[in-house]
Image (cartoon, rainbow, N blue to C red):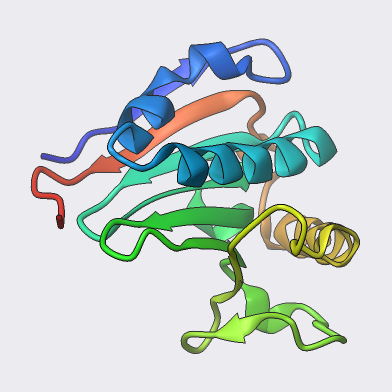
Amino acid sequence: MKYLLILKYKFPIPKEQTKDLAKFLQPFPYKIKEIAFWLRDIAWYLYPTTNELIYDNYNAVAWGCSITDKLVHTLCTIAVGRTIHNIHFGFYFGNQLSNPEKKLLSNGNQYRHILVKNKKDFPKTYMKQLLKEAYANALVKVQHPKEIREGLAIVKSVSANKRK
């Protein structure tokens, strides 16, 4: 079953009011959830008026910060794999980022990510630079200012079947 749920909040979206994400992450180990929410806090702190697009998919729970309600305007994504429980901090259009230190891994033509195993090894300063670049890229893709939305938590899809 797929559905779209849009909730409007004051900025930034209070974490307590985006219970769907917490519900979707509930089956994962505490340590995985802790790192995933920590990564979310980093992106949210830098871009507090972005929207949160949430996908509870077959293979992963993923969400991202977007300046609209569309995936194409996403700055960054965080994904937690269902089987291996690995965490990706990535960029939907990572192929368009400079990536000077070559820390982003390639899984295709456009998506780039890093694997996050713990907080201390996360290259926070480097990711902040790439997030700034991703924000500028997302703004360029917006065709009309009315597309920009702020403070939404949007569940974009929920897969009835989950990989175990």
